[in-house]
Amino acid sequence: MSTYVYGITRASSSPLRQDMDGIGDPPRPVRVLRQGELAAIVSDAPDQLRPKRRDLLAHQRVLDEAGAGGVVLPMRFGSASPDDDTVTTVLAERADLFLERLRALDGTAEYNVKANHDEEAVLRLIMTDHDDIRSLAETNREAGGGTHEQKIRLGEMIAAAVQAREATDADLLQQALRPMADAVSAGPQSTGWLANLSFLVDRGSAEQFLASVDALRQEHPHLELRVNGPLPPYSFVDAASSQQAEGGTAEAFGAAAAEPNG
Amino acid sequence: MTVATQQGGGGGSSGLYDVLELILDRGLVIDAFVRVSLVGIEILKIDIRIVVASVDTYLRFAEACNRLDLEAGPRKPAGLPELTGQLTESGARGKTKGALAGAAETISDAFQQARDEGRERQGDRAARRRGE
Image (cartoon, rainbow over all chains, first blue to last red; front, side):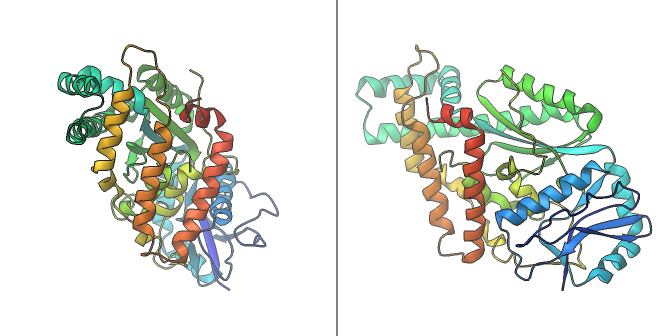
């Protein structure tokens, strides 16, 4: 029976609620393995572990509840150890590393911000800012829409302008929110959103951070901003590796995100 | 504008759709542990950005622009958001199909369900997107 690992925390963290449900069907009970100053939040692993919604939710929920009792290093979904002993051995061997990360992340939470353009609003901005696009659009309209070639030429110019605007706005977002956070991590890019940024925010400054997001919404109504948080610090557990190595994996998620009506 | 902040916490499915890529793609990886049964997820890496630079997209933008009445107030051109969804969806589906087996389907099921719930929860937003 292998052991599913949700996250690593301090042994001194508040004890988990009894009978907390983990992944699997039926849900496997969550338990804690202690080793020195550290503790791993685990459950038995189901025989067939797959990225099902129920299990993704369970993973997130366990980390969320554990995080309420003290800082947790969240594991990536789907991490299983051959057995309990391997988990405690890892805790013992890498105690310094884990304790350092726990210290670094103490009192913080991840806030993920995703931005989209409101298409009509951004088209308006582009028409206002680009004389050439506006006049071509007017010419086309007067000609009853224009020829196929004229439409394509207009569309191509607009697409280029939209993409340039996406880059500008992604930059603006990062510049505006970066000062409110301890760290920032770029999530996977895709067409689903023009910016996908995770910010490591001190829990004491969370309100300030959210107020800044709101101010951005007011100031730039063509931006649709979605904030998720507080989250376990998924993007900040691994000081070195998590940023670029597998950034492309989730590009397909952008495809999903770009289907507003399914 | 009211605060539209979604709280990812609380353990519900609220926000799951928006943070899936963090749960699957970020977080601590320890080499002594195995990441099981996730074969296929990595294959999901596709470059859907190519869809942006397509004739379909150009024509869609031209049409949208045509319908955009610069004198009028902010009003959604009817049908535009739906069109966006369809184009992107077919682009993505077309690329993933064939290259993938079960894992991809499981993931897309998860997305679909999370998305459905997200829509119910974000009724206002969905309504706005549909141009109501």
